[in-house]
Image (cartoon, rainbow, N blue to C red; front, side, top):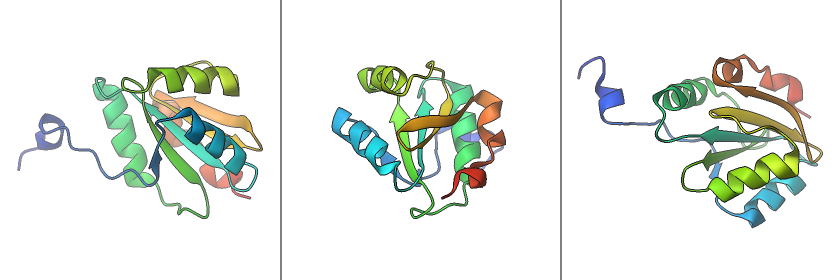
Length: 125
């Protein structure tokens, strides 16, 4: 196994939550944000930088389901959901991007290198 094998084979570690694929799920995660904070990771599957940031985020993610609801959004396959997230939560679209949602509102977000700088533990209930 060589140094670049994971990039050549497009391997991604397992996402610690759900895939955001419908408007009903978007409404569900917003409603759930009143109980526990929700994370939405917006990812472009064609972008190597986005893939790198996603892999880095997943490998360092140390929270469990009672801490955060974690949602993965494939921007290319679910563009309309991505647009709805931007509109409904009043946040400018970026990719990659991580949104932290509490009480129905985005309380923090980051893009690119800012994603792994977000102090997620500060948003725990």
